[in-house]
Image (cartoon, rainbow, N blue to C red):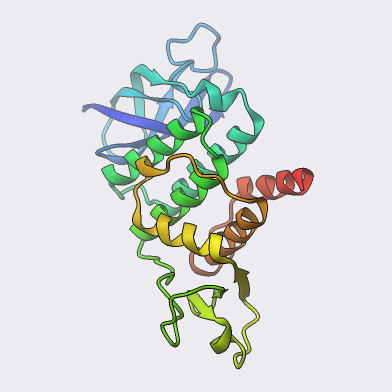
Length: 250
């Protein structure tokens, strides 16, 4: 069977002396494993399209299981990401997180467009941390995880400041927090509350230019990483590298 798909490379693993195995997230067929024969050779016709993040059209042969790549037409390589260590680190985190959350059978053109837009924003010098936070929320939402950011999960109070209760999956106001024992509380100020509420409602193509204070970014990072750890239980190698970068930049 011959198939053609628009896709983004999530993983590219060396196989043997000259081949690569690609995990390609496609718009209409979910994740597809492809054998790219000779892709490691310098003059291979698959060199460009077999790189991590590559967005293109993939013509392949095969049925269920791994297919064989026959032709690849590159649309975008995201060179701006590849040439920047920080951008690369965050982009690797995005594709690894998506790869771990999506089964091979999951098909989502919405999530495909969300990832593609996120990579475009990173390539165009948008704030990589803010793009990442928005992508995390969209990926969680499509899998049924929606933190409760509307107000206090106990009394319904809408105005910050709040604590984020990871165990209860949402905000808790200071009054309700005062008589609760919850080791998962994370303090979130008005700036973080505003961004979390906004990001829960907008789409990736609406991210715009957002100026965020370092302390607000730290609160957002703690909230999202803690929520992901508690509810998804995925382990990401790229996450550890991001945390090391944060320590170096801190």
